[in-house]
Amino acid sequence: MKRHLLTLILAGSCLIFSACQTAPPAGYAEQAHIVQKRAELRDNLIKLLPEEQRKLPQAIEEAQWLADTAYKGAAAIGRINKPERWPAWRNNTLVNSSSNRLERGLCWHYQHDMYRELRRRPLLYFNIGCCVRDEKTGSEHNCVYICSKTDTWPHVWVLDAWKNAGRLIVMDGKELDYDDWQDRPASTEWLELVYPEGHRYPIEHWATVRTDEHWNKHEPSYTPKGSSTTQAQRMRENIRKGLEERNGNPISYSYEG
Image (cartoon, rainbow, N blue to C red; front, side, top):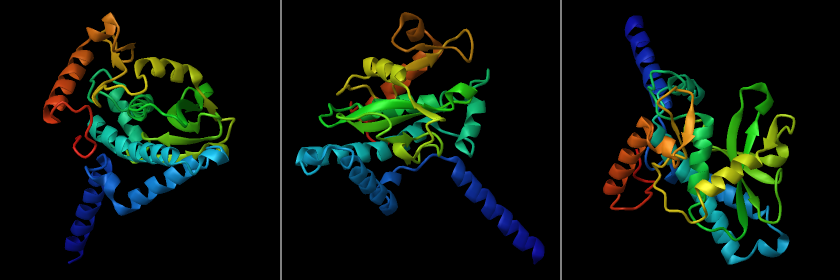
């Protein structure tokens, strides 16, 4: 009896651990508690705006779109990156290795991907930016943030899609330790060029790709050197398959993965 009970406990633990390893399932962002979080983020984004803008229907709609896209996009990005380990940071070893077991999964991959998703429409009231934690220690952590067009860092909400493998973490920029966290305008300026507002890049598009010379060297995917890499070829094949499955649509957050 004791052995049978132990077996059930171990089996249950394995199932729980296995579930934790996976990215959010399709439909995750439609669960009631996530819908509530989307509403909370919308309200917090509206509070970033000047008083005279907060009740404008267009501003409220834009804040809602950003909140919805943040949670839905993060989950879809997690599914596409296919993390194999938990916590999510343990997947870094599968990306940062010569085996190339995982194509992507580093924090700055998620940062690039989140930025891409949040730039799918022109914004009238908000801006998207990049930030970093622990840049000086060599173990930096990259995220994106949303701020009002009339303000900037640290009056922001920080979005971390990486730490929980697509289960979005939201942080109030004003409550962060500024010795650890900083704005990163250089990353924002570069990604602005890669992903202009209103772009139509498919969700499978990568801003950078790994070179064939070394597993830890990367090139912008749009350069001649980057576009000729093996990883860029796989990216183009992923894009082709994704567009075919979605009837030409660049995204479908309920489908990816």
